[in-house]
Amino acid sequence: MLDLILRGTVIGIGATIAMDLWAIVLQTFFGQARANWAPVGRWFWHLGKGKVFHDSIGNAEPYRHELALGWASHYAVGILYGIILALIAGPVWLAQPTFIPAWILGIVTVGAGWFLLQPGLGIGWAASKTPSPNKVRALNLVAHTVFALGLWGTALLIR
Image (cartoon, rainbow, N blue to C red; front, side, top):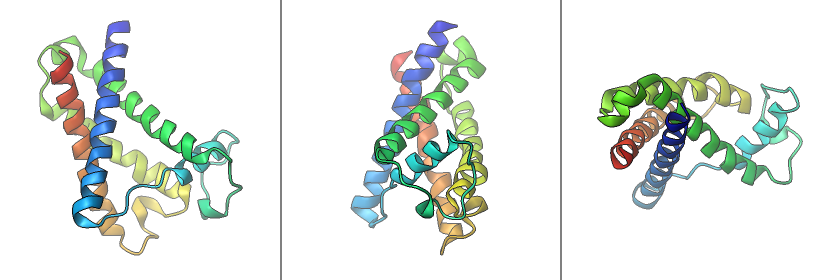
């Protein structure tokens, strides 16, 4: 069990790095703004105080270390997803990783963003209150597919 948790931790870190590298590619070659993790840190700070949904996270009380908390939570969630994959898929998958289980988890995790984080930040269900919700949704699906590739690729590297 401890081995699954440790390997899942490494897989989650690798997948989150892959997602962050993808964000750099989008910014460098396509001019897409990179994620600002400060609002996510502010949201996590307020989540600890019992407040889940905000009309606008920008209007919520700031937290001095929200950017650091945002980055830490970004990686903590990635690690959690890596552990979940390792526990569900088990030692057989870890010995011979395949893409489909990682991709299924990657796509399922989009739901946490669409139905918890984005409404929590005040941008609506599945980014419905943003100027281009379909663009945000498509970028989310692609980013989580890259995350899935990172889960699979890291699992291949550490098997």
